[in-house]
Every structure is written in structure tokens, then in C-alpha cells.
Image 1 (tube, rainbow, N blue to C red):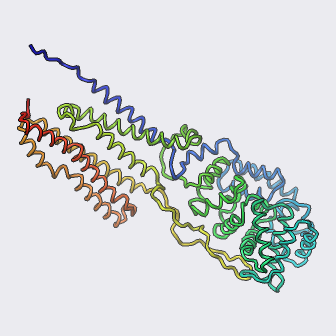
Image 2 (cartoon, rainbow, N blue to C red):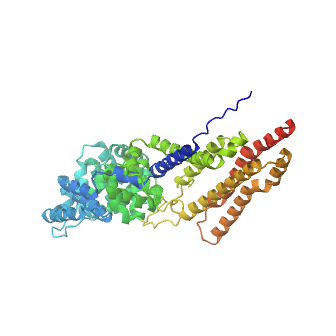
Image 3 (tube, rainbow, N blue to C red):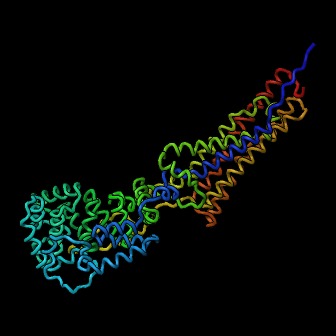
Length: 555
């Protein structure tokens, strides 16, 4: 006697509802976690700058150190980023300026500046004065030269000897008529060295260049440094220049800052303040030259959040995402402390969330057919589709991942001045740093992906429908062959989507982006591969085996 044994039906409703909810939670975590590979989320800047000093507080600190020159630029930067403390610090600065009127032209004070002060009009207005203006007169240069000749520093004496070099390319030699600009820059460089206002690496490089110039009677690479110092000396007062050069790691950094003062003078207060805040002028200059005008706006944004945000930005050397949307503020601290684990968590959460959603749909819509087909709908299908969608999400969530680094407006170009005058170079008319993916492009790619998911579901429903019919096995095989056009539908939809996207791009309705157009073809290929390899082929094999074994289709 055969006893029929009935197994209890699995708790499908609880499984698919629980998977759906857990998958939605994981997707929310992945979407809101502000972790990116090649860009920086604004939430990270806010978190990094939390409780750190802003531009106005930094200006107040400089003023307390009797450095009104750098403080003035920091205060101007604070006003440009709308620092709430800028007004109060501005009142303090105005009061300081009234009480210490004689310090303002120099941006501070140095007792050794007395030789330079000879002949200065005591009734001149108390305003910041570029340091090279004090070296315009022959008397001022002679006074400074006599002062430096008494120096016991060999490097200072070597720098003075470079004034006797006759082989130059961009300057007129200092000893000839018209050589006053070069003579003034040489004296300024020697005086900066005498007062230890050059950073250690910059001192070593300048000394080596000066020794080579004296030995060969050619200024060579030292002339480039003199030209850059001329540019900065015509725009910064004494203390401003000295403070900047203390943070420069070499002549290359001085060249970058000189170039930025020519092409982006409107950003000088922000750039200068960031350099002093981070004590790394080279990192700030490199960021601006790499990212151009968008980089300047990113630096301004970071400065509005405080010193910590500026340090985070220049240390990461990454653009800031500008896509609007909610950010997981609580997760920003975790991302800052653990950037690599946060990235892993973000995409693992997305992968798990998509997989759970797909498995929940399988349990809800295809579970009866899956039991009957006995393996024609393998679980691996959900995992593979989840991996593909995770890759697509990774590409879309990293707006700068597929963007090649382009030349920017601030890229250094060759500048040939006339008679020692630093020529003003206008911004280069070249493409700016790429911006994040346009919302219309993202929307079109999302629509293409949704269409292919719909085609995929339709194909599965058709297979399930054929399997449920009480027909002979050979008839089911014929029906499956008859639906080949349907199973290839993903390719047709993909080609149509690509053609539509290209037409819309030509008409200017969406951003010209080949990724948006050809993604439709890619999704179509993936859809057809999944349908035919993972579903149609196993089911046909099952039917063929049943027909060869003589097993009836309907038990």
C-alpha cells in the first residue's frame, strides 16, 4: 500500500515580504551612504569641517599674530564664502588698521625692513602695497644691497652675484639699462633668504640654481623662478609673500601660484587662504590647476565649511559631486574614518538589496512554475542579474569614473614677458573639467534598464505559460520555437532604444552622451543572454529529454 506523503508548503508569503523589506533597506543604505571612488560627496566636506575654524576665525588668528596682510586676504575669502563671523572680524580688522596704520602697507612688520623705508612718504595712505613697489627707486635698491652685502650667509652672497650674470632670455641683465626689474627681484630673493622666509626645500632648490647660474654665467632655470617671484611681488605685500613662500615646497609651487594669480586673480583670496590653512601651497595649486574653475568653486565650498573641509579636499585631490539628493549625514563620519570599508559596504549593500528584491519577485510571481519546472529557473539567475545591476549602479553613482581628465582653464602655458614685465595671460579657451552625468542621461539609461527588465519578466511568464498547458512534449517544443522572436525581443528593444537616444541627442533634447545611447544595446544583449542561456535552453533540454524517454507532459 502506497502512502502519499505531503510536505508542508514553504512560508512563501513571509519569505518574499521579508526579503522585499530587507532589500529595500539595503538599497536605501547604498543610495544614501556618501562614499565614492573618484569624487567627494558634499556631506563629507560638511562632516570634515564640523567644529573646525572657518576663514573668518583664521583671519582673526592671523591678526592676533600681527599679520594684517595675510589676515586681509583671509577676511576677503571669508566674505566671499559668506562666513557668518566675517562681519565681526571685519570690525576688529578695521580697528586694528586704525591703530597700526604704519604696518598695513607691509602687511606686518620686520625691524630689518628699515633700509627699505628710506624715502617713503610718511603721509602715504595706509593700504596694502605690493612689495616690489618699494624697490622701484634706485636709492631703495642700493640701501637694500648695502644691507645684504654685510650678510654672512653664503647663499645670500651667491644670489647677489647672479646680478652680474649677463646671459638671460626673458630679463634684461641687471647691470644694463632696463635691468631694474631683474635687479629688484634678485634683491628681494636675497632678502627673503636672509630673513628665513623660504621653506627648507625651496631654499635648497634656489641655492642650487643660483650656484649653477653663477658658474655658467647663465640664469637658466633660476630666471623662471625670478619671473614667478616678480609676478607675486607685484600683487602681494611683504608679509603676504613671505607667509606664502614658507609653505611652498619648491620653485614649481611658486610657478603654479604665479600662474594662478595671472589667470584667476578673482580667486586669489580663497587660494591664498587655503594654502596657509593647509600649510601646503603645492597641494592647493595642484588642485586648482587640475580641476580649473569647478575646482575653485569646490575650494570655495570647502572653505565655507571650515579648515577641516579644506584639508580633506586638497588631500583627496578629487572633484566634489554636484548632483542634488539626500545624503546620509550619520554615515559621513564613518566614511571619513574608514573610506575603503565604506565603499565596500555601499556596493555590497546594493548587491544584497537587488538580489533580495529579485528573489522576492521570484517567490511571489514564479514560485509555482519554478517548482514545476524543476531547475529551469535557477537561483543563480537572480545573483547574476544582481551583479550586473550592481555594476551598472557603480558606473552611474561614480560620475567621474568614465570621464577622462581634461585640460582646464588654469593649465600652465608658456608665457613670454617683455622686458621683465609679467604678461597677463587670459584663460585658455579649452574644455573645462567634466561635470557629473546629466540628469536626462541618467533618466534615459534608467528607462532602458527598466524596459529590459520588463522584457525579461514577459519572457519568463511565456515560458511558465507554455509549461502549464496540458499538451504533448513535442507540441511544447514547437511552441517554444514559435516564441523565438519574443525571446529575442530584448535585442529589438535595445536597438530601438539606441536609435531613439541618438535621435534625441541630435535634436538636443538630451545631453550628447554615447554611454546613454549604447547602454540600451548593452542591456538588450544581457537580457537575451539571460533568457536564452539561463531559461530557454534548460527548459528545452528538459522537454527533449522527456520526449526521448517517452514521459508524458501532463501527469
